[in-house]
Length: 157
Image 1: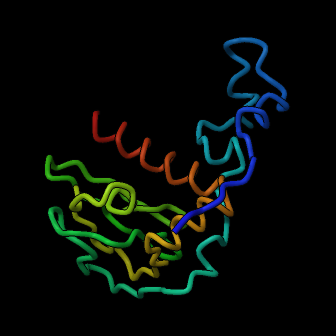
Image 2 (image 1 turned 120 degrees about the vertical axis):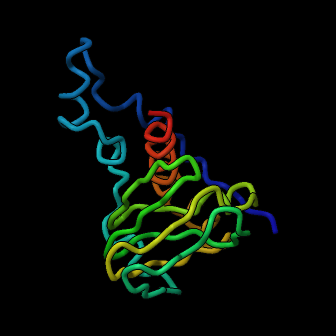
Image 3 (image 1 turned 60 degrees about the horizontal axis):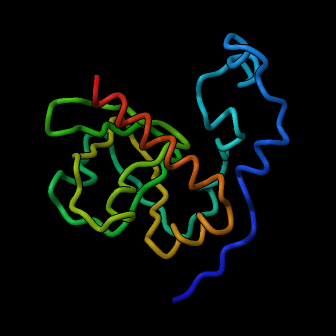
């Protein structure tokens, strides 16, 4: 399958935004937030509401385990999920956050275990849907990368 990508250019779009004039201006420029998804308008409320497949997961249910193969990623629609790394690090995720995307990106086994903390509704996103979302909604790709970067930084601490 061949996908034709649009001519959308993030670098060109960013040059049109008012730039910070000093080191302390970055937070003001970022809308007084440190969350890149909010800065660039990447938090896409309701993005997962139109998913084709949902999974209702009761509190305490194992979603996937580290080392398992994975062919889908998830978007949290409602509820909370804990992502537990083998080194003991734990990250709690809520609505509009994604997890499990590494299996979609590089076809590797799951690097963490995911468990529903509360009754949770998940949007299930397979590789085909992932590629569609990246193509049609470029800020989706940036949101996913931002979520991954946050988790990597938290794991390093």
